[in-house]
Image 1 (cartoon, rainbow, N blue to C red):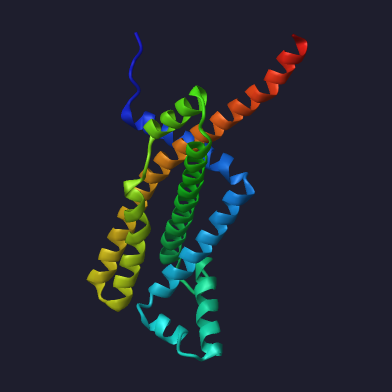
Image 2: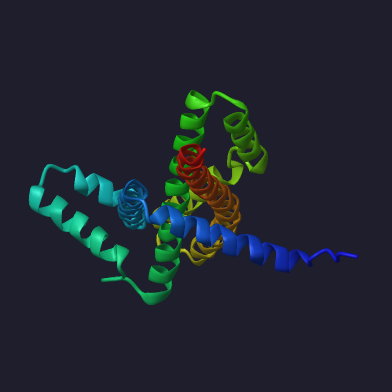
Length: 214
């Protein structure tokens, strides 16, 4: 008689598969490009928003030297230069997670769109249907992507108010939790996509060999 796995063990198993799916996708050049661009974009945005709208006003003031200085400081802040360690670790983790989620969303979207356009036949239709059942859409992604930006802006506008800092930390922690759940969902779908593609590629290679023997 099979025993059902505890929820925690199942979650960890699923998360491990999701991480494998991400690593498999990271081996693709297009995926890496999306990841790097998204990481830099969100990193810059979060560091700029940490000072409220003042950084944006100065950025577009027309003073090239000042704008370059602000952008340079924001870019270096992505890697912790000029930032205190707790803020850097949290912002870096969120930026890394957001870049991962956006890259996975783009990967899954492109695959599903390509499958829908080229699906002709029972096997392709079954594959598309299976992937759709595994998980279509990601309702937590929007919350995950927007929450840290809004909380960072909120703390920046509120200045040094202790309550604002605590609320911003709470929002960021919740965003990180939602992000992990979204990563698990998208990573599992990515893992299924890549493994299915590998299986279909092996099947295509084996088919001519069987035909030549017969």
